[in-house]
Length: 82
Image (cartoon, rainbow, N blue to C red; front, side, top):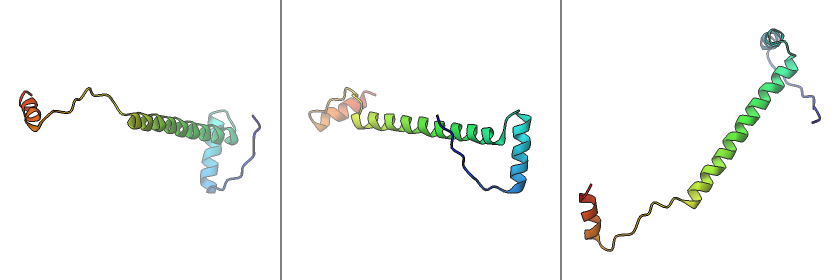
């Protein structure tokens, strides 16, 4: 996969802290930011896939083995059995 350079603007204090954090982790600031972006994108993709699946299930519906009562009395009789 081809890498693309990007430019971002952040507060200088944050940049310094981020460089220190990257050094503590033995990586570059660029790699640290790229890894965090990958995590965010992956989480978004997982969420989107789960949402699509849930919407598919809602569209398809569930078979609850429910049968429409023939009349109102049957419905009330069934409720009294609970």
